[in-house]
Image (tube, rainbow, N blue to C red; front, side):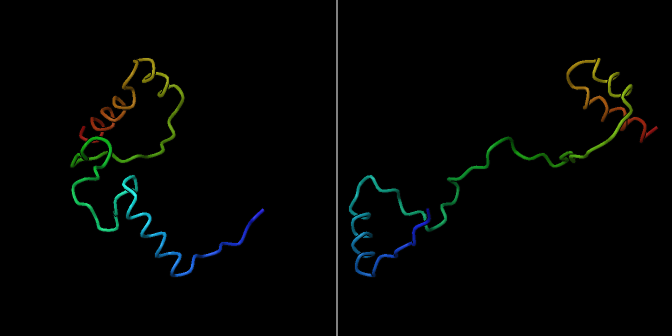
Length: 86
């Protein structure tokens, strides 16, 4: 069941704000941007990043590369590079 939001009056809002400011456990004011604190997760981005694509290959080709173990997609990429330059 939805209830209607009742907004506080200006005086109630001011009283709430004073209470929050006086509370030592209240979260810090982050309305201003904090430079250098927020880090991007993960590794640094490489200059020559790869592009994610969807590619349909013949079953026997995929099975052959998968049979070689982990890194089979990297080996497909290497084979395509050799074919491009050859």
